[in-house]
Every structure is written in structure tokens, then in C-alpha cells.
Image (cartoon, rainbow, N blue to C red; front, side, top):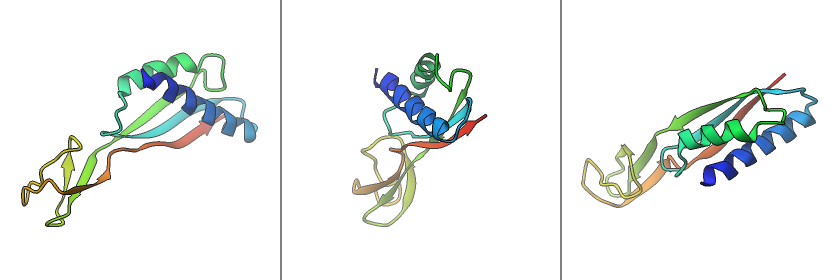
Length: 113
């Protein structure tokens, strides 16, 4: 389960930044997770709760913004939502697409006390 290592890294980064700012605790960590990132959000949340114990983030919450996956057709320039890496353009039925959004894993914000 790679969500455990992801959660550990997120908490590590957030705690280091909070310590730099002299914070006594972290109240919330906000992430952007793309639909095509391969991350199971429920598993990430479960792992997050476990890895926070004994850290500045112990009583914090994890807010996850799931980003839709967007693509642009290289043939007709139409933009559309996709659910997988292989997608058919709904306008011209081409498979030549460029993925614009949906693979992200981004630490957006850390709220501290």
C-alpha cells in the first residue's frame, strides 16, 4: 500500500514546515489529489490518521480536494473530462489526447496553531 509512504511523507513535510514557523501543532493539512494519480483517497485518509500519532499533526484533519481529470484532443482541440489514461475524444473520436489535469498530488496548505 503506497498510501502509507505518501501519508508519512506528507506529515513529515508538514511537520518540518510547522517547526520552522515555530508552531506548536498542526490543525489541518490540505491536499489536491488528481483522479488519475493512482491514490486511493480512503486508504490515504486511514494511513494519515495512523502516521500522525506522536507528531505535531496528531490532532489534525486531512482535507482532500479530488481533482477531475481533463484532457485536450490533439486533433480537434476539444477539452473534456476523462476517467482513464486511454480516452476517446467525444467530438472527433480520436485517441490522440494530452492530459491537462488529474495526475497531481500536491500539498496545498498546512494550517498551524
